[in-house]
Each structure stands twice: as structure tokens, then as C-alpha cells.
Image (cartoon, rainbow, N blue to C red):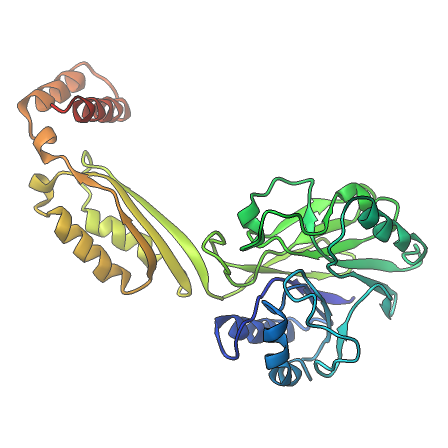
Length: 352
């Protein structure tokens, strides 16, 4: 059975940068998984200038990959692929003319600045091509309107729409897979009404700080559901720590635990909030920040320290008396903790 690796939105800008290295990793993943088709659904480059300067190196890495390489232009690199350009052995820059591999037919819907009735007609015109005697795969680059995405989910785009379509546009076209690009944020799959799949793999490397978490590609056998595959590439990771002064936990140990489980390629967006009791833990706000930076060892790309020392409240006789009374009243531990937090917030707000 034919095996496919589907990705999009690499946005390569330079030779041997982290996005270039991501492409090399994806090619190796394709080899390791013995994929037959390596599919890039738009925005392999960040722009036309990047494509032209990198084409000699691109020819080298996309030749002899062990698979057929199919690429469609996206909104960022729509001017990068001119007719007759050579990008490497077994590379096909796919347009609306279908290519066939055995019993599989593949058609491209490259990015164009069209929408509405014009785009719907462009898709519906595929009806005579996508006949039911083959497994049909459509490659496209655009914006799915059926799902809610913030504008930031599409990378650093403007406010305009980028070839927006709906799942209903693909009905009655005998499509088994719509393999898409343009949505950066995460891997996502929708079932088509006629039984096929619409898939966004997300960007395989974080392009903006909104793309958090380990990145993925789509690797599947034709005839089977899409399957997310984790890749070891640079990505942003949000680490949100809420310090609790009621617990006996050492805040430094809590910070260490969060960093110990991070992926080696993670670029951390760190926020430390909550409260500490400096009297109890024998550590000041300045010392905690310094220790945190030491633990992070340069992994942070953004740091926000919002925690506060409230030892004057926690060591106050009035607060201690209140705590003793709610414990003596027989409240469960979780309820005691909740009431303590409410009291702390009230005292801070009142400025007592």
C-alpha cells in the first residue's frame, strides 16, 4: 500500500538554519518510514527570493530521497515555482493537472488570490478529473472556514482571507484525502461528508511563538486514516507555574520538575505566578528568579515573573488564627486551602 508523508509551512529562509534542518529531518523521517510520497502543501519557502537563492541546495537535498516529492505553492511562495524550474530528481511541482501512481490520483490546488464563487468553481471543476476508479488525493493551501481559528493560527498573516473554502466545497468529488497547508498551529483532521478526510498537519517547526508544543507531520497509508507523527524539531513551549505559599513544596524544586520534562528542542515561554512565603522557605524573590534562570540554562525566549512574597500576611497572627478555626471546624483539606486563598486575596485587595 502507498505510504504518504504530508507536511506544509516550513517557511525556509536560509541555508542551514533551523527550518532548513527541519526539511532534512523530514526527509530522513520519510526514509525511515519508507514513504512513497513526500508531500509539501505550500510555503516550503518564506518568499520568492528565498526560493531562488536556495534552489541549488534544494536540488541536492530533494534528489534521491527514496520517494516522489510533490510540492504545491502557498501564499508565501506562490511566485517561487515557475514553469520549467528544476528542483531535484523525482520532484513534481503540482498544479491542477493530475499525476497518477498506480491506483492513486493526485491533484493540486495551489494558492491563488481567489475566493467565493470563483474558488468554488475551481474546486467543482475537478469533478470530471476525480473519478471513483481511483483513490483521489487533493493537495491545497488555504483557509478552512468551518473551524474556528484565530488569525495568528496561520502564521504572521495579515487580516485578509487566503483562498478560504468550506468542507462542503469538496462534496461529491470522490475525494479520499484533502491534504492541506496554511494552518500552522496544530495537527487537525475533519471527516468529509462522503467519507474522506481533510487534514492540516500544522507547521513542522514553530514559525511564531503561537505555535507551541512538539510539532507533527501526517504519515499514513492510503486507505487508512491520517496519523499524526511527532517530529524532533525546534518549537515553542509554554511553561506556566503557579506557586502556592500554603504548600510545603520548595518553589525551586517545582521549577526544576517543569524543566526536566521539556523536549530538548523546546524554546520556553516561561511565566511564574502565584505567591511565596519567604520567611518559611528562607528565599527571597530575587533568589528565586536567579535560581530559575540557572535552571533554564538559556532555554527561555520569554520570561515573566509575576509571583509575590506575602510572608507578612501568612505570618500574621490574624491569618493564623483564621486558619486554625477552619481546621478545627472540620473542613476537608482542599476546602481549607480554598478558604485560605480567598482570605489572602481579600487581605491583598483591602491593603491590610
